[in-house]
Length: 272
Image (cartoon, rainbow, N blue to C red; front, side, top):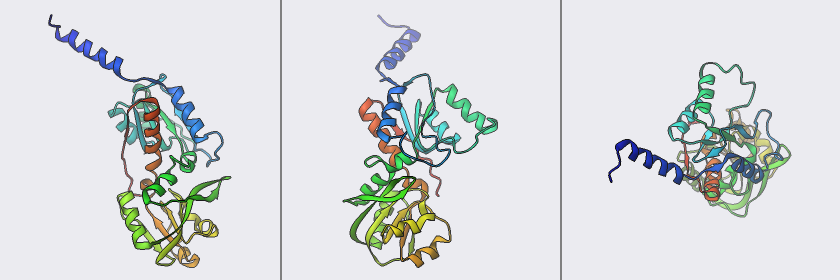
């Protein structure tokens, strides 16, 4: 018996819907909160770690990206995701009124049932899935020790090694997909390297105080060039965005393995 086109399409759609894995949003959120110690890790005011926007309660596809913005929400909608994992969330300061593009962002989230989960410093600091841990792994750095005490906890990692600045720059280029900026304030050989992704460049004194001769982070202000020379510190700026793609990918991949839900990375580089 041949099915009419409408009945055939309905059957195919029903089969696909039944085959698509569905996970309770609450189960994913509870797992992330426990894994990342969301309630325990201190963060900057306004970070609002955890579930920032709910959906109707189920997740079938996860998207991960660095920044929550109108552009990345549109990408998530296009990808048919119903959970967006981000490092930089929607809320950092007063976010009203919801007009113009802010209203468009809210409309897209609600109309397309898209939840948003954000993790800033908790994801930076995680010993396995965090930005710092995954960047160290990509650089081949081992025997890691805690580094960069901030907000009541160590956020990054350091290691003792012997590697030339040129070789380290090459590894960073390979890991990040872009040539890092070098402030050559130290020696040609890097013997104690500290890693803190993102925007830690304004805290070179803290890095030097903890004994590293080479500091890898995302970005820093102009005046840090002279400061690096004064401190005798090599500094690599790999880009705020580029150094913080690792954590959301690792977290989404971990969720995918555990809950058997597909995931994708939405690349929206800033060049900064």
